[in-house]
Amino acid sequence: MKTMQESTIVFAGDSIMDADKMNTYDRLGNGFIRLVNDGLKAFRPWEAYSVVNAGISGNTSADLLGRWEKDVSSQKPDIVFCMIGTNDVWRHHDYINPPSRWLTLEDYENNLSAICEKSENIKKFYFMTPYYLEENRADRMRAEMDAYGDAMRKVAQRFNRPVLDVQARFDEYMKHRPGQSINWDRVHPQGIGSMIIARIVLETICV
Image (cartoon, rainbow, N blue to C red; front, side, top):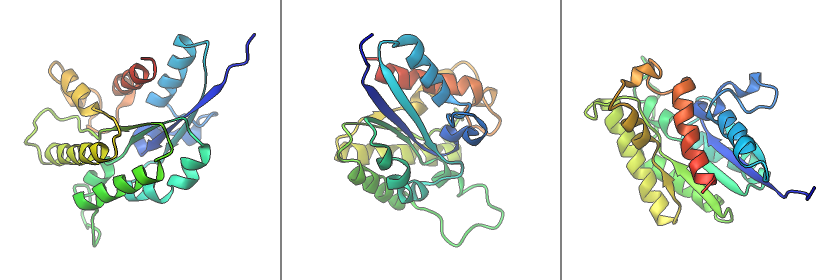
C-alpha cells in the first residue's frame, strides 16, 4: 500500500471547539471536531489527516492570540480553522460585577489581524464566524455577535482569507426550529449544532 502524506488540521478557538477535550482519550473532545475527524476517515480513506483540537473553554481573541505560537504554529499546520469571538461578546453580558475593561470591537479586529500576521505562511486558513442561536436580530447579544462577525469579514478581506459563515447556517436552521432547541444558552452547539458545523468544515475540506 502506498504511504499517504499526512495533512495536519488545527482547530483554534474556545469552548465550542474544546468540547470537553481533556476528558477524551485523544483530546479531540465530544463536539464537531470529532465529527470532522470521523468524517474524513469515513469519506476520504485514501488520505491521512492529523486533527488537532486547539480550543480552550472561555478563551477570547486575546487569549487565543497569546497562545497562537504554542498551540497552533508549533503544530506546523497545513490547514487552520479559526473560530473565536463568542466570549469577546459574551463577557459583556454575563457578569454581575463586570471587569474593569472588556475587549472592544477594535480590540477584536486588532487581535484577528495579529493572528493573520502570525499565520501568513499557512496556505489554507479559514475564519469561521462567531454565532448566536437567536433568530431575533434585534436581540442585543445577537446584534453584537453580528457586528463581530462583520469585523471578522473585514479583517479576512484585508488579509485575503476566506470566511465560513456559521451564523448563516444556523439562521437557516432557525427558520424551522428555535435556537433553544439546540441549547438553552444559545451558544454551545451540542449534538445538533455540532453536526451543522462539522458539515461546513467537511464541505470545505472535501471540495
